[in-house]
Image 1 (cartoon, each protein chain N blue to C red):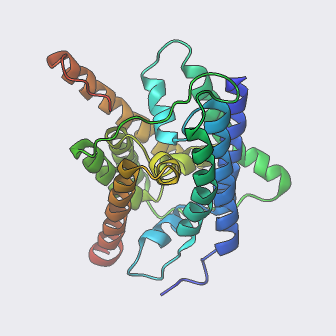
Image 2 (cartoon, chains in turn red, purple; image 1 turned 120 degrees about the horizontal axis):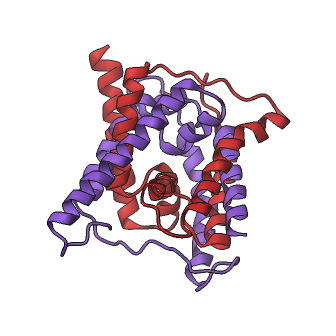
Length: 142
Length: 148
């Protein structure tokens, strides 16, 4: 059943449109895919003249909350996971997105927008694994 | 110019993530928890983003150069192989454990969330592990390309 207390249809749809607009700007202006894991991963494989735009993009992401806070209060996140679990999750996300060549933005947003079969398979795989992991964590372990 | 534009895009992308609610891991877990009270917000984020992206990439496909100059770096990989599927499965497990994927985690670092900082440092370590493994592999079998 739908969790109406937490479901935010309008702000999520609006945020999605803004994310899509950013991805549109990036491919049309810079000729680049707005895939966060790939952009960060590329920094670990430095080649001449390639790091600047990557760092600038990551800088924009990091400054986004400050820009948002100029207009209205930032939302307060709820993070259930403790530090050891977050560290484990971070390593898995780092290794997984490297081998899978993308994450929720590169495969999920840009790849599906391009109707890329690779990205459709990748998105189905990480969503499926996410559903299964949360099921185990929420309903079997605890 | 490219770097300035990349900063602007990162800024807009990050603001979109905050507006969408995706910087809150409890909303990601709420979407991934199909057996519990389900929060479909993430599906609307994807829907909104893909609706705009679909049009943009149709335009992009016909272009030979970016508007600011330079090549169109559209992905060329086509093969659906074990690396793609296994990697994505591992990513999904990590995503489900914490409720963070790379974009929202980096934006949350900008909010000063200590938990996001730990996650991002661990994620960078995971990416570095991949680089090391691939470099060793490439040295052993130089004739096979490892980057998709």
